Image (cartoon, rainbow, N blue to C red; front, side, top):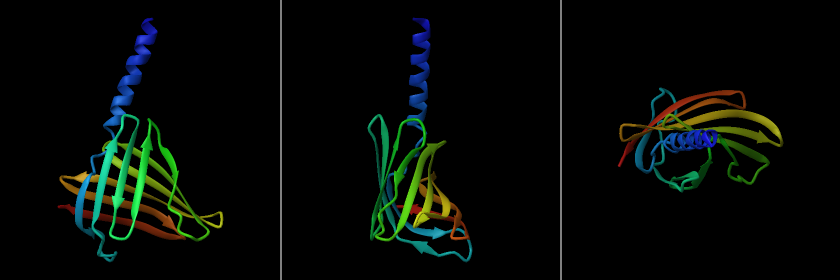
Length: 151
């Protein structure tokens, strides 16, 4: 019986720690500007809604011309397909939260061939939103950071 209590206590602790590992990103953000000189100066404003139902975190990113939904379940990384873009392109996503950072690893396949992998990390910087993307797509190195001002 003592072992059962110990296992149950550890399971509750690990679950509660994981619950708080995802950052609170919900809000509206504007003036998203690259912090890397020479990169695109800005992108559309974004509104993020977020909820946790005791089992999974759901993030909904709404931009002016599209919406993206990410769902993270349980203790480990969650895998989901990216949006259908109407071409022979598949996007595989690996989603995770750790230490207040939402990480999205994206693998892009064109006709089954790996075209590259990138990792985008979303976090809070005070009340603002920080976005950092690194990786390689079609042989081109990606290294960009954006700061978005909370509205």
